[in-house]
Length: 315
Image (cartoon, rainbow, N blue to C red; front, side, top):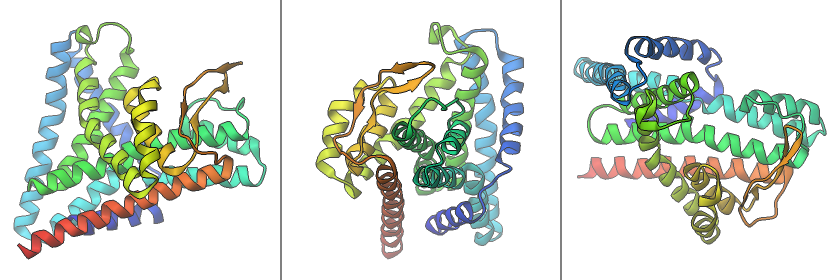
């Protein structure tokens, strides 16, 4: 039934992306700010306490709600999982934004592509040329797709296999990312992590992302160019400023035959960035290869989950 919930949520995301997600995140922002206001004293231990108090009640409540609905009627628990996935995923918005930028570049509307990319990445992008827009769009989209699709799927499946209901896993992953991002944005990420209120939240976000990044990269290798993926993962990922994100980007570049990274025009200078990938596809061709890789990976995960479900039914 986890497979059915995932398929239904993905279809809903594509047909009707949750445009009002900002209101959901607004509620979450208020929720995490409550713990910041009441527990923050600039100490790591207080941040750890606040994180557990913010996460544990919602996690336990979601598991109990799933078990209760399953006891009443299994269909209710499936609908509960679909709703949780629909709220936690954001793949539809980013895939549609990716397509809009691709169409703008294909039609030569570079100014429109700049506007769309600025909205997507939350940073001015007017200095980028067409090739740089394509590269940065792929990079930003891959990170967002990891956080709003692959990471959600991984933790949903893990909690489903553990019998706790996939909704709790999806919520745990999304809430941990929200806590890490919000508290870092509020207090800054500089200084000693162990003396900062946001230190534990950042650590937990990184720990919960560790497995999805590597499973996603391995999936890219299976559905794409295996040898180039492994080569780029091993030799280029560590060169990226964020080595964890470097694993995702380098493996995607190798699997799809595109080049990511490389210098880009930003803030009036040519910002130097390491090269990722060994391919030669550019602009629209590169974006097309990247999105095909993502969809093949989604399909592979669905097929794998189907096989696991079938194996469980036949035991």
